[in-house]
Length: 326
Image (cartoon, rainbow, N blue to C red; front, side, top):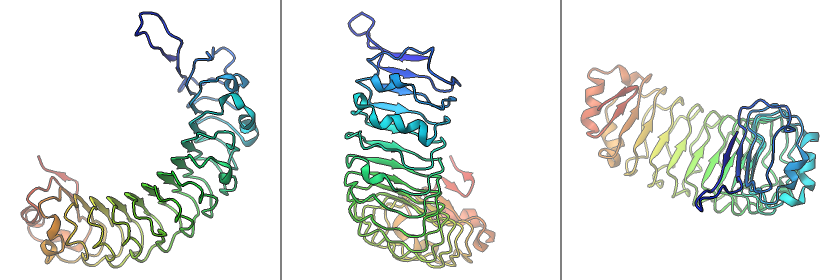
């Protein structure tokens, strides 16, 4: 068990962090919980109930119950533990929850993680504090984006591996930096005018078009692999883009990225690009900057002098497909 203390005055101070990760305990009966604790990490144990003493820790800021056996009924006491109402980080990832837990009590909450559960609806998020900066609800069974409009301070939204069909209700999330929506059933891009966003993942959805990113001028990373996109378009305004992944689509040529001067990583593997002809012009803006290029499993990867041609076009390239150059 890991206790962290401050010994700067030469005396043993009260512990502020208790880390019980992977102790496989079924309860906390034999564990001392000092009132000085600010962080309690109970990751990877066998807990099926919450020890009521957790609710008596007045300084607690971070509580992780990740990878336990917590059910909806087991988490209910949390909503009435007023002593820990200043909690800033609550992690309930990888448990047995079927609905959003009641977190209304925590008016200073910054991080809320309920990924890897069996949650089918976002009903209940409207009660979560608008102070929230990071929300993780990946790997659940959510079918609709709802009750997120009040998260004006939100910076990271993770809803990957759910059953979402439509992107919606994002227009108020003006501070959003990262949006992770991979492995859903989304057919159309709708970013509701978000201009500050820096990372977007829509991998493994049902997109057939790239149209919809034009206003996201601050975008630095865009992941669109494993969709049904046939044409590269709507990218010319994304002048801050560093990473573009459009692998495993239906592309036949490279378009609309010639003025992306900051592009470092370009993933085009597993498409239908026939020839390397015109590649230099297509990626002209990033010829000096590009360090990673994937084109394997395209017809053009069978070209004579494939690797040497690419290294000639991109003088600073460090990796072509799986081949890394010193």
